[in-house]
Length: 146
Image (cartoon, rainbow, N blue to C red):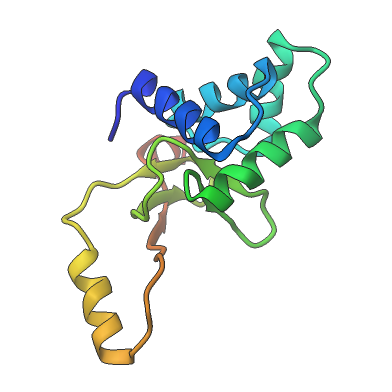
């Protein structure tokens, strides 16, 4: 996993390569994504950016997120009934731990899953583009509250 500043620089460079506009608001969105290990929602990102740039719209945040997802620089973590969350620190497929009570999401470092992805491709004939592996449970903090 890249350091936050290195990841921010990488996101900025990728947007420049793509020809995307680098407004101060967009850079602020990138900064939240590169530095947060909380897997924020669009609304949470908006609240962070709005603190420094009050004229920022939620639409700007959503457009930036959609572009980064399209570029493969951002993982969308969608849940039924809950808002979508985003992982900007690690753009490649990787597993997550998700607390069903407080909705906290943590990156899970496991042995690389590429061999499994390759096996699935070989067995099924599919060309695997990405995968999603999430573990749902109750985090230690929520267990203590019970």
